[in-house]
Image 1: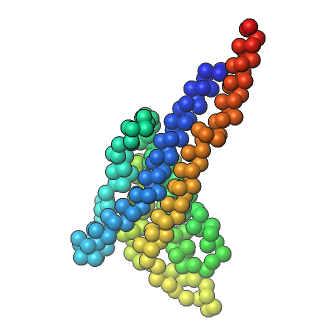
Image 2: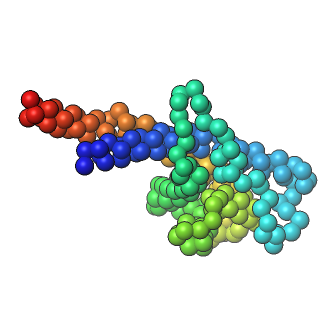
Length: 217
């Protein structure tokens, strides 16, 4: 059992280090890359959202796959695990979903048209994008559908009630800003796993080893 525990800790530390690296990429690079790609495309097509709003093909590069191609720094002796592609895609998806949940909870008591738009948009895609085992890149798909969605009129209760036009691009930027904070928070937690979370287990292992040694001498 002790050797199994040692192996599990080693694998867990490897995955934690991998997550910490990839969450750093998510926090510092991916969000800006998404918006830069969007605005570059808008410029290329003359600042029109799309000539065919019913086109379901991808219009932005698949950012998850783009960043998976980045080599990790070999100087630190870090080797990606065989599960990195799955883990990276899952980290991006979960961070995106967590950022949406936080935004909705932060503004729960606000009479905010952007919150209502996000809530409706998210609920419509909860099963197709965030539930079950599906394709890679669902977070990219969600953001792309949001960015290329038409502005929508949302009714909010203010006095006798008003209707506000919501720009989906602003909502997407809202999500990406929050996702950056989520990724940085999770990155910090992953970095603490080898130095803090495992230290007590390693001490117990050492105590057991010393007891076994003393009993045999």
